[in-house]
Image (tube, rainbow, N blue to C red):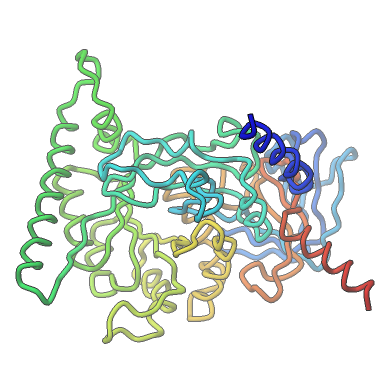
Amino acid sequence: MRKFIYKTSAIIFLLPTAIAAQRPAPAPAQTVPVAITGATLHTARGSVLPNTSIIFSQGKITGINAPVPSNAKVIDASGKHVYPGFILVNNSLGLVEISATKATVDLVESNDFVPEIRTLIAFNTDSHVIPTVRTNGVLLAQPVLGDGILKGTSSVMNLDGWNWQDAVVATDNVLHLAWPEYRKSADEKRNKELKENRDATLTELKALFARAKTYQPNSGVKDYKLEAIAPVLNGNKILFAQVAGANEALEVIKFANDYSIRKTVLLGDASLDSVLEEIKRSGFPLIITNPHSLPTNESMSPRLPYEFAKKVADKGILHGLDYSARKDFSDSRNLPFLAGTTAAYGLDKEKALQSITLNLAKILGIDKDYGSLEVGKSATLFISDGDALDQLTNNVTEAFIDGRQIDLNNQQKELYKRFKEKYSTSQ
């Protein structure tokens, strides 16, 4: 009995705190046209249009510098900037709330081969972290499991939905593979064990793909793992292959060619510098993992992680950026500043913008609707007082997902206001 009383008391005690810290409710559907006027438009198509208006209705962009409908809601954005919503890929946002509390962590499976796991249905639209990420213009995300070899199937989600059904943009369109890494030890016996373990893992991986190639889903024998892999082989699903270095990248390219997986995307850091020519010849896009990284070895220039995006772009390789770091889900609000760093180290500013907008939309297969400001595309965009790739001047004032104006409030802003009021009045 005392145990019951204790639990009830705890719930009553915590209730006021929970109510005070509620996540902003998702925005209602757009009901009237919206016209943003006088802004500088960064189209993500390489052009910057000063003193321009953009009009959208029923969630779609209907005009740029077109007549403003008489019933439109007009937002004067003179002196401000309009950008397409940023896209966050290869991240655990929505799968983790508090990393130190296991009950809120849904990104780890006990098996290394779980292609059938769908992050779609685990995506937490009520996460308190999501509103803090939206504050910097990140409006679409791809939640991905953290560990494993075949790390499940991901979907593209918008960051303002009542549930995952509301939030989904592209369903189960990417299978994630973490290619086994070459690892070495000073101990010869340990080296042998590492090689044997890696060889066994690769054998199991290739066996799964070989079985998936001949799998008949209507044969009466259902295999969920093979059903998740088969669409990669017939071109209906994209393979994201994360590699630890140049040798692994070359192995993935060969693996993809052996199994005729044309929709392959490589994910790796500046350690791939020596094989950029091979990556270009493969035709595979490259997602550069967190440019805010230390050199991976003693011989690497400390500037290379920052300059790498320009080298990739100069090769003509379709590329994007992700935010994969130790606290990737909470720190991913810094995604635009990764692009800003690549611009500071030589990449054209609008190409840097494309690396977190249109390029990623192309890689994910959603560029028909997202990734740039063009007539007919989704009105998923935001307004900033300053340069959205610069952490000193970026200040998002309004944001829209499919034309719905979202609430940009969050817990961090609430705490800032609360304590600002307290200490400003106590002086």
